Length: 114
Image (cartoon, rainbow, N blue to C red; front, side, top):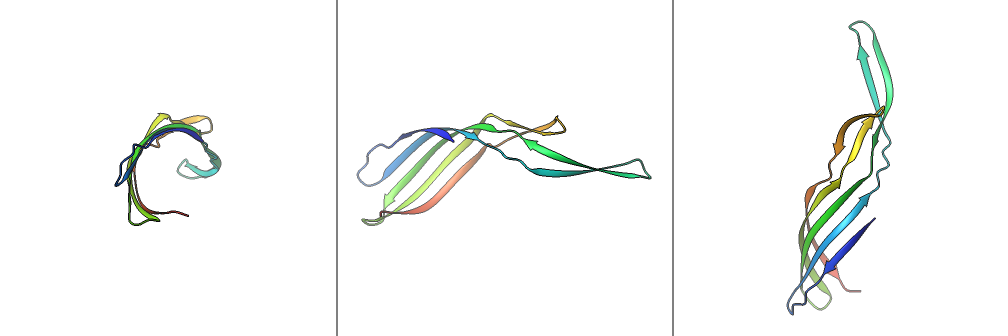
């Protein structure tokens, strides 16, 4: 779920889409973890749940589109997703690390008018 601001300047031969966005990432983590502890003789197995909290990310992107004919366009874009609020990854209420969602995104595609 999020909020986007999109700017599309007009050009005769192609189109650009500039986007800045905030997205709330809902995480439903149902990861079972099996922990084995040994004292050298005995092995104890504990089943634990790994919990990943929700996060908030920002996205900056630009997309380029050029018409191939009247109904078909080629699209290419690049963007960057960055962490604003990282979700914690915990086990038994012990914080292990933060869930990092930052990264570069690229897209290529074909658009069809319907």
